[in-house]
Length: 93
Image 1 (spheres, rainbow, N blue to C red):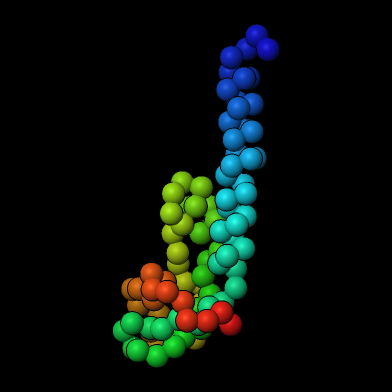
Image 2: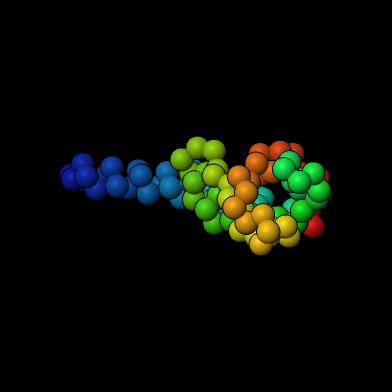
């Protein structure tokens, strides 16, 4: 291996395979199912589906960014601030 660029690429590839991919897979599995959460604005329970792909990809660079993909209170509350995603969950649906 006389080419240092090749060595650096190999190290980065191994890091991605052994560190980033397992973390992303864990986060994807954690957020792939719908959850029952309490809406802080309305005070009622709602079934919320989180965008698991976005959470998995962003978890490679720190805390996952959570976005609601579907909510049982939509369409009337479609433009909410999604603060329910920062609260502890009530139950998985």
